[in-house]
Structure formats: C-alpha cells, structure tokens
Length: 265
Image (cartoon, rainbow, N blue to C red):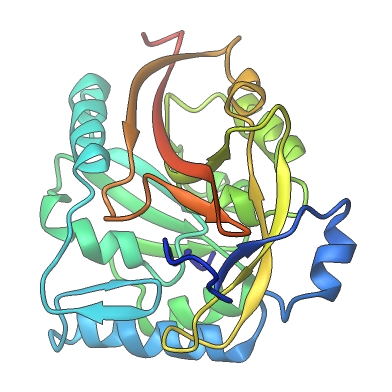
C-alpha cells in the first residue's frame, strides 16, 4: 500500500480534505491507488536502493541518508527474543519491500526467518520478478501467506487507513491470533468517530489522489482488547507526522502500537 506524505502548510491544495459519507463518494473525487505511475515510480526508487544507488526510499522518494524506524526495530528484536526463534513476518501493504530494505541490516538469521509483503496483485507480480530473495516474499493475501509460513509478527505501517472497509479487516486480523502485531504510521483523529477524507499527493512525489481514513483511537483499539495487551505506544519516526492537518485544521495525528497476544504476554 502506498504511504502518505505530510504537510503543515496552511491553504495548501495538497494534503487531506473533506468528510465523506461513503467510500464510493470519495473514490469519485480521486484517481485511486491503482494509478500506474505510483507503481512505476515506487519500483524505480526501490530498485535504486536494491542496486546501492540510493540509501533509502520512502513514499517512492529516494534519500541519501536513512531514517530508521526505531520503534519497529526495537519491538521486532524484542519479539524475536521472546519467540526464542526467528520470526516469520508479514508486512501488510508493504509496497515492494520498502521497510524490508530500510531495516535489512537488522534482519539477522536469528531475528527474521521470512519477510512477507501482502500487496495488490500488480505489486506482487512486480515484487516477485524484481525484488524477491531468500527472505523477502510477496503474497496477495494474508491467507495465502499463512498457507506457506507460520506467521509470528504482523506489521501494518501506513496501510490500514487506505482500506475500503478497515474495521472488518481489523476484526479479521485480530482473529488470526498472531503472537505480535505492530501498527506504525497510522492516522487518528481528535473526533468522536472515524473520518473519511481524500488525500491529494503533491506532484513532486507523484500525481495521484485517493481516499484516506482517520480513525477514532478508542474504536480502532476495541478490535484487539480481548486478545491483546498493548505493550507499547509511540509516535511516528518521520518528521512532521505527529500532527496532521485536514482542511487546514490541526485535527489528526500519527501513532503506533505494539500488541502482544495475551497467550504470550
């Protein structure tokens, strides 16, 4: 799933806008996630990282200095220690392996047995042909991945807010009963209920727009209270993501959670 960009600038035509009553209404006002330019630009950026021509990629943009997601790294290492064996990891909406390449130097054999990206079919096809290796794999669904690997750790970074029906998905995710779940870069709102917006991406990233949810934090976490203990909370590691503007008002924020299944807590 394509990640987000962030802007604090008032009266900006790029960012998050509106309060839509349905996914269909929001889609009519956007170009959608399937725009070919998104995949192509992401592919080119991650290919530069893979070939050593760039250090780091995020949101299809390459950087000459890496930003590390230290909460993810810390909780992943912690989980591997608790697990007493290397983790089989799913990265839901993980693009073409953006986070995998970002933290690859920490994925020693005693930490990670497999890193499995769950993505749209056209990403899976591209990932399998150009980026898959002995550790990194691509699947079209969690169920397909689970038929191959016994998953321990689920990572969802800036992905759930782009689903048409996020709450049924979250309920299903909890039912898989994974040992560890980590949400990172997830959008919340200081309002009593979820808000569906449209996100306009600046053209220097790519020319696209798509629906984007902001969640009520309490309702979001309700899906996991019976099965999971919140073992850690943290803010985004990306500068500017701790506050988010909707219609030029400071309403949203990004946050992460590390959940441990109560069976293993």
